[in-house]
Length: 114
Length: 114
Image (cartoon, rainbow over all chains, first blue to last red; front, top):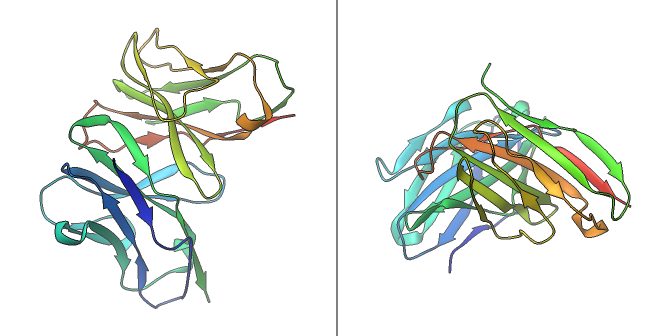
């Protein structure tokens, strides 16, 4: 069985402070991992992806994520939050034995305080 | 402009009245997919299509039908909608059914079934 767990449903940070959004997956197969962002009343936009190349992945808008196989984690980070980062973030897994299916975490809503 | 277009964006209807949500992409993508998004559950895959005339069930296919007669279009059909299908629906596409490829999402369709 496989699953994606986003450990926090809500995260609140102050503008200019670091962001950490946590994601763990469970699978015995090699995954491809993605982070998407969803702004209100919008579709999902890709932030970054991991596909078995470098374990530290850099994405758009200053976000990055590190794939840690031993911890089955793919946490999303950003050194300094901006107000425009306030949105909902989804961790997504696709598995090599059935890459036609995508599994979404339940989402983390990021609030950025002035 | 490369995009995934869903119509309608909003629909309120009644139980049992057949409806179709259209999805069209202009990127010549092979793979298309439908998701529903419900609070606290993230996105769940309804159906996907790997190419013309090739479709398969996702995790929550009950009550839905799809068709893929042309590469660019992937309509979602609710033959007899029920209130538990009230949700936010997203269509997505990727260049090919490969886990390295991220998905491009439409802006969503909010369905309310009374």
